[in-house]
Length: 172
Ligand code: AMP
Image (cartoon, rainbow, N blue to C red; front, side):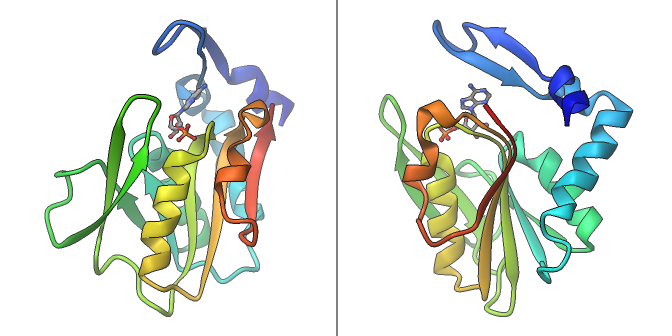
């Protein structure tokens, strides 16, 4: 884990002043760190019978795909509005300024699925909470929530349902 931590790049004042952005491109470009991330993420769910990993656009696509591959599960993208080509369902959520929307294909998850929803970073939790509501509305057997990094000072866990298993590889 120390090796992965050493590869995370803090970018100050991105995308706006006062934000310290946890940049994972420096982790993903490092072959050893990429390998460790895939292995460590998958160890959290080895015995859970996971059938689908949902990755949140866009940084959640990278870790989510690796996790799905490691678990022998399928990968499902949760995307910004207007990007998915077939029949979708959508959820609105509050951002700092105004609202945002995410979508998923209506047929992406079925009631016999066991799902991990993955994003790279938990900040305020608004994005993941909306993704959870989307996936939940498709009624899978079980939902887990997963992040590579959790920024605990921002209290994002409070935005997520208390009865759901939430795991983060690295907590700051
Ligand atoms: P949230 O506030 O939890 O809804 O986060 C929104 C999205 O922004 C997440 O998908 C994160 O990938 C990203 N994000 C928010 N804050 C940071 C940060 N400090 N560093 C890196 N990514 C962030």
